[in-house]
Length: 226
Image (tube, rainbow, N blue to C red; front, side, top):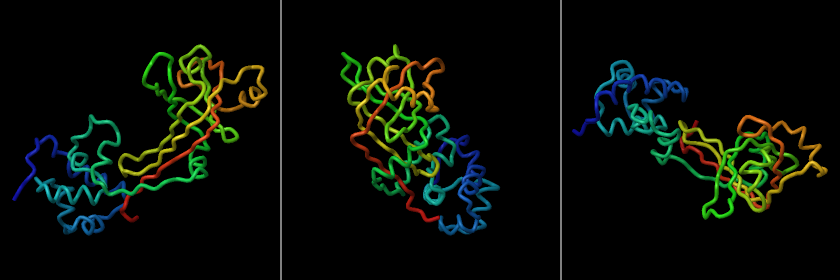
C-alpha cells in the first residue's frame, strides 16, 4: 500500500488543517466522512491524532474538502493565493451577460488597467481604484504619471473576485475608449464628487474616463452542492 513519504513537517498540522477547513465549509464529521467515503470515527482520528495517510486517502479527503493535498499538508504557505484552487478540477465555467458584468462591478473597487506605453511592445498592466459612473469606468490619477500620460485611446480593464479556498469567483473584462477629463470638461464637476482615490497615496489631479465598447465575463462555480 502506497503511503505519503513527504517530510514530517509537511504532515504535522494535517489534523488541524482538516478540522479548520471542515469548519470553514460548515461540515460535520459525518458529512465529511460521507463525502470522502470514510468512517466518521476515522475523520475524528485524523483531526485529533493525525496519521500518515495513504495517497489515495489524502486525495479523497482533499477532494471532499474542496482543496488540494498540498494545502492540507501545509506545503503551499509560500505560494500565491489561489494556487491550490486549480488542483481538484471540480469546477464549472459559465459566461456572464453584459448586465451581470456591470452589476458585479457597480460598487467600484480595485481593477487592472491595461494600456500601451509608446515604444514598448507589450502592454502595461497596473492596479487602480475605480468607480462606475453612468456605465463608464472612472479612475483618478496624476496628470504627469504613467497612466495620465499613456492611458488614452483603446484600453483594457479587468476586475475579478476569487475565493482561493473554495475555487470559485468571477472575472469581468472590458475593452473601452479612455480619455482624460480636463477641468474645462462638463464632466469634471460630476466626477469631482466620485469617491475614488488614486492607487498611490497623494494628490490625483486628473480623471480617466473609460467608455466600454465590449464587456465580457465569466463565473467559475464549484460542482459540489451546498
